[in-house]
Amino acid sequence: MRKSVSVVGTGAYLPSMIVTNEDIVKKFETSDEWIKNKVGIIERRRASKDQATSDLAIPAIEEALTNANLRAEDLDLIICCRDVGDYSHPATACLIQHRIKAKNAAAFDMQAGCSGFIFSTLTGANFITSGHCQYVAVVNVCLHSKYLNMESRWDATVFGDGAGAVILKPALLNAGILSSYLKSDGSDFDLLSKPGGGTRIPITHEVLENKHLLYGKPDANRQRAVFSFAVDSFYDSIKFALNKASLQVNDIDLVISHQANINIIKAGMERLGLPMEKTFTTIHKYGNCAEASIPITLHEAVKEKRIADKNIVAFTGFGAGLNWGAIIMRWDS
Image (cartoon, rainbow, N blue to C red; front, side, top):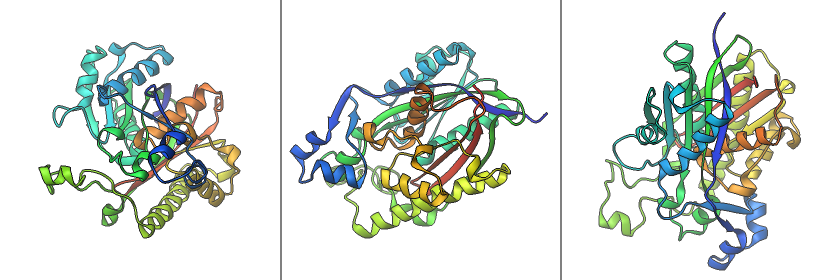
């Protein structure tokens, strides 16, 4: 029988520092009502000054291993999907591999923006279905507060720090991942970008002083374009993936999407014709955690028993690249 891949354990780590809307209002010209209505956030987390990417990733992976009843030495591969790692080199996944003592695991990093969970999970799944690996840890980490402009109202309001992890294992046919969809369009790369700090615009004193490393305040036209892209991607990716699995929208038991904006999620669910009761959200508690938002939300949904054995779960992510995609999974607990 053709092999598939399922999730055997989930984990998450959220830094202890909580930044509430009241904290934001004290610093910026905005209001609690505006923030909740515009993006759906009540509070978000911030890493401490001494925490790096791997410091968030490790407890998330360790919790996922515990929930999978596995040890670090059982892992064959660790994939760390992140925006910025501990260092330019080596890969943060190698630091994680060493610190958790996953002595039998290879390790590498990925970058795929807010659709990172979709891309990294499918990458890990392919290592399993090809026969190269038995157990793969996929951890997605967001540490926005280290490199975004926390003096910008938008960046400080919307983004949060956190990490989410899954452990993947082989599954029998008709269980685990049933289908997937991936898409990219680099022609609109500048809709969501941090232009400074790469080889095109290397780091200089001027780049740092002008905060060119950071997302700036989005203008109204850009906001509309990003919103439209996100809602279209939410709908299209799930519909394409469902079609590949010979399933219908009404077969979905739960949708777990990238937590960019509560209004994007509401619009996407409306386009699908599904009630909000068929999704699970964490944006109100953690803000936009980019690539980490889907696995964090999945972990909390599992903890709250929102997913039962054999449920059809649709995952969708969309963001910088532009990248977007979906996974349709029959939960195999």
